[in-house]
Image (tube, rainbow, N blue to C red):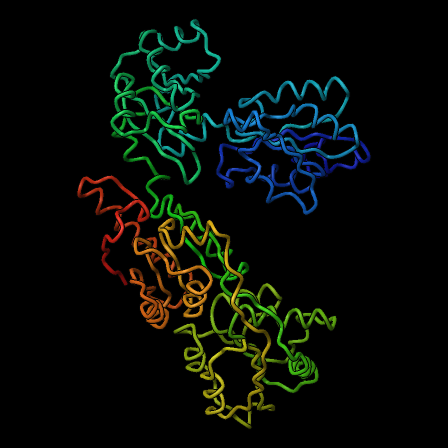
Length: 556
């Protein structure tokens, strides 16, 4: 047995056939703050009961088919009041556990510090239902960290946590008399009242204060003020009054939250693309790694497939070619895309073959992503372009046919139905015979939902990444032309030319034909834009917040 694994794990055979509950802390909102143990517990859950705020954070780690009863009930009364009713979570948990199911009860932050999970734990204990607790990053700890506000320093400052909704006069008096850091959980429209309580209890009006809303998410925003000025800061910034005044915030009071210090330590909100909504018009499979990279820059990627991949209309040619691989017909096989790898892999699986069928055959990949797809298949490419990752780059490194050293003169080229003839012509010129086979078809995807189309045309996106000329044509065809405030980033000159032909102004051009270099170029653009605003003394805004028609300098 792994000594680090809890003996009360819901995956443990000790509880086979019996109900079990895992009380799980999902953190303040950033999905990356889930612990490894939390991910493991979610994968083994039969029932997932999560607070609405963290449902999307945890649902992606649960297995397919997991039951997710909703805690929110929207009825006529709650719609009128603007506050949905929450079902009794304890009853939902107990009902599922009594049925012998493995239940994960996910809460915001940490089960022991945020919310009232303790009452639900006591209910389990009273009925003899085994449970475990998976700690999470507490909201009062995680949010200040993402806001760049250290709670303690080398002198070991005292830290107090206060929930303004339940704090009584004695509580305010105690924290008011202290000179330590106070972390206050409250709502946006109650911050000024909490500041007033602290001043009335003895804290100086000029004590620094930071207020953070939507902490650890890309919607995070932090204000710097003092206990005496926070109401005026909100009024001048038109933060309040607001229909979102009920939203929770974390306020940090004390010298450790001084604005000058936060300006140096605000690592999260100062990311180059922080809060940018970036449109990624690619197939779902291709968009995943690019979206992860964009998130690392603080962006909010929105994937809109513009191309759908379908099998060839006549599969016989592909079937003959795959059989030829096994019978020794080819010296080389050249993959020009991830989709080509996927098409061959699916045909292999259909015939009960695996990567061993490539034994004795040289394998070429047009670029790093295609090579990675082959490695995932269990095949290490023999040839990847040392220079430009394209058909031309592949031909630069491709050896000419030599009848002395090459027993077979034939190359298998599985490709899309719309691929260019550059590689075929180049291989023939090098002396090779080419079986140019349509492995898959690319067709225009269905239009995205109406709200996405409206955001594209109305300037709701801050940037769009075009990774090929076809993504330009297809996006404009299915969704319309992006608004002129949207930053247009293109993977290369050909794609940029197509964008300009469609009336789009290209702002960012990737230095190399790579989606990851394209994302880097966009991040560099965002960083320079941010630095220019700060140098000019202007507020840092996203492109979608600028006036329509504002011009931007092109970068390469």
